[in-house]
Image (cartoon, rainbow, N blue to C red; front, side):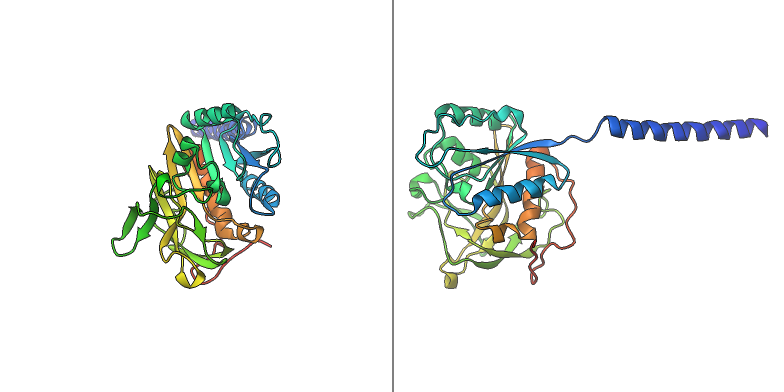
Length: 302
């Protein structure tokens, strides 16, 4: 009997010791925080500086990221001083649409992504750099700034064929109709960013980008939205959320987020958070918030 009691007491002692070691290790070795650099400064959309602050908050509230901001010189000013050290970061989030960066910065950025760095592009960031081939390969499709059939095909979902199609017909690259609420429809239910999200959800008032075109290589379209003709849209199911690869780097491209009220949509926030985690790690650990919008009911932050 004494032997049994001795064994039990030692087992209990070992159990509590292991708990204390685990607790110590959790404190001594906190979970990794991924470093994000948001680039802003120039943008043809107003209130994007506020958008940067909002996105920084959204990312940091997950407990997964620390976020710095790099702001470019103003439009028309000398850009030579803009030389962020991309190597310090896991992810670059572009909230930028403006003048070209210095060639040295472009080269450093290409190297960063090619060697495994992550990129998140938000809304008008896909308008940027129409003549920078590598950037357009990273984002897949973009709009405006002189883009046309020479930039690459249109990319949209054809309901009759039940697949994404590339259309090489001549035409402008980039347009949108009136701002309005619209349904975002999941196309890749198995992707980590989309797993668990509703098949359809109502997005807050926003610009619905359509007729985007570009290299359209290595693109996985995660979600689309129908651009209605009655809202002066294309009449097609247009890509809203996409992932791409460039070298070893992962890219998440969201066309959502025209204005601060658009960026307060819980759908925008959640996909931004999950997309950034996937870009940084290749997986998503975040739960779907209970207030995520449904097909009939939108949801927005105050």
